[in-house]
Amino acid sequence: MSSSPEFVAARLCWDQLYQRLNQVILGQPLTLRKLLAALAAGGHVLLEDVPGTGKTTLAKALAAAIGADFKRVQFTPDLLPADILGMSIFEAAKQQFEFHPGPIFTQILLADEINRATPRTQSALLEAMAENQVSLDGRQYQMDALFFVVATQNPVEFRGAYPLPEAQMDRFALKLALGYLDAQSETAMVEARHAGEAWSVLPPCVTREQMLGLRQAVQQVHIAPELTRYAVELVRATRTMPEIRLGAGPRASLALVRCAKALALGSGSDFVTPDHVQALACDVLAHRLVLSTEAKYSGADASALVTRILHETPIPV
Image 1 (cartoon, helix red, strand yellow):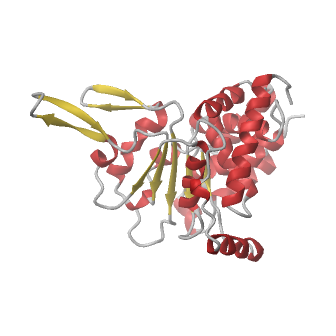
Image 2 (cartoon, rainbow, N blue to C red; image 1 turned 90 degrees about the vertical axis):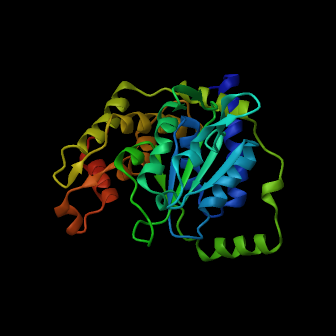
């Protein structure tokens, strides 16, 4: 690992955040590292799991650990885009319209149960997640440099849920799942909550400026040209498999490389290895794939197809 002050500070920031989150979300070390990789890479995360596994708690704990501005939007079928973006309201005293920003104008946004809103409302997030800005009434409003979306969703088979459109899924760098805890971790979690541990009122362990420094340090992590080609080959392979009707696009290649660099930094390295790329491939690619009708009815799984691509694609040496 580089001994430059920037890398040392970035590594310390990562470790402090990880340790704080690990106190709240027990038994999920790999998922926490991947979440931090997305945050450090400037991406956004979709958490899909059954209710009660800690998705909302994780987002709130992350905001508390950074001391960041935090807004939560509970997505429902009657939610409108203006409820997220804001609107211009006529001020009689000033005889003019003034823009009243919505909850999207924050540093960390929790889009809770995002798939319970209609696709029209879901699309309100697209521009902000892709371009860090919102266009309303002919004007552009810039988001905070730290802007990070954590969206949660229950499996689409649950009643009252709308599948996210492909364009929306493509905006998430990673799709993660927490899953159920093992017996020991679940017991420890229940005991901690029963004892009234108030993690949400603990002082922040890192600052916004430190987080932005972490993102800058990620950009300096080295990735060899052959590893960049390897990541691109993995993405391109999803476009030629007969089981896949719509493969991953170039945004997936960017996300895979950026998140691999962030994961490398978090692992204590200033260069990317094939292991970093492989560790994130399923999380970056699977949710972007649209399977063919035949593949879906035959029980094919997107993650399994990505795993097959990993086995079939030569690893650079």
